[in-house]
Image (cartoon, rainbow, N blue to C red; front, top):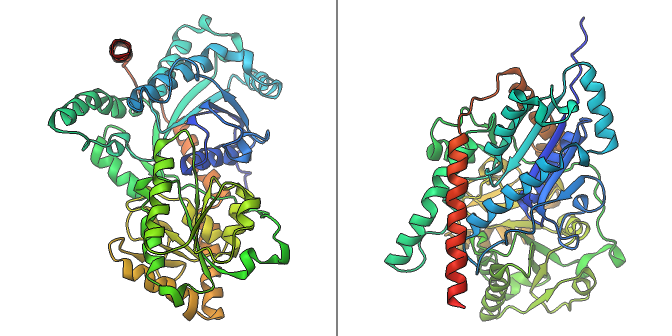
Length: 497
């Protein structure tokens, strides 16, 4: 019996806009961890990382994280032009990456490259997500290296290059176009048009495009047609290793109250209000001995986070629910028993694990979510999930086996499930759902499963010829157009001062 061919160790460079606390950030860190576990040399480049507002792996040295492209372009200009700034920041980021060249490579990577050079067999993989502006630039860089090797150092000449783009969801479908009057909508449409066209074209420069769910694959095919080739699924994952939570005095969180848990960023599209209304529907007697905990990503720099938290707090109070807000674990643990709804802002990973392991039910309220990693995290902890019956949860939650799927418009149905889990489910049924949930995550959504799928897709890229690309003039034209737009915006801003 012949031995299997050993896997090639590659240099993997990942580009992500902002390493904050959110599902996209958690996913890209897991991509890095999964590939690093396969002995690849992994580097992660980002335009922004706040050590006080990011996941532990992004700051504790577990991953090689490098910050570039955070000095020329802001996140927004007067709260607007987000996509323009995102493109500018990523172009700046990839420029910093390519200009640094071999000078930034760690000694371990250099050693690995030298060994590979002897075999004339080195391979580089670039992985980007969210913003595809870097893809055509990296593609042209690879073509220049092949045609003009004297541009780069000797160690880079013979290395093969492939680019993978991980699509969370088409950006043009996320942009709001219903703001303002007729003139405002027309201006927004004109502003978005070149970026909408650019998105599909830039993604098409990648050697492969993958997506986070079958739902997203269908949307991508509908928006971009067949120009991206076959878009296959690489599911996000959770680390199924042992995760430690925060030690709680007495072993019981908040005196052993039954916790209904919502974890999401404080954004209106997450529809966290649904959880509050459904919880209120339990009535005073049904809520006795329970607590709704609303936890998730919160950034003071993001106006929507601040505004939506205030709106949710006002909603709960209008329903005669007593509320409290906490920004630290210590203050959260000392909240009085009389509080019905707790808002926890930017929960540390360890305390989030404590919440997941002690809660009774996860309430997941976003509709048409592209994937949704939180239900998977909950199932990994053996926690049943109540989620909206659209989008990603249809692929993660199994009705009656690992949780329940309900229509977001039927609030009373959500209340009914809450009441069932809190007061009618016996220990045997709860244990069965918990076991089903853990088994499903281990099979479909583990770090190991994600690593294997990424390996398959990367190997498939190298087994085929690089996707052809003739977009030099398009890159130049778009760059000039974007530069002129930036100049026009700055002139308008200065004239208004």
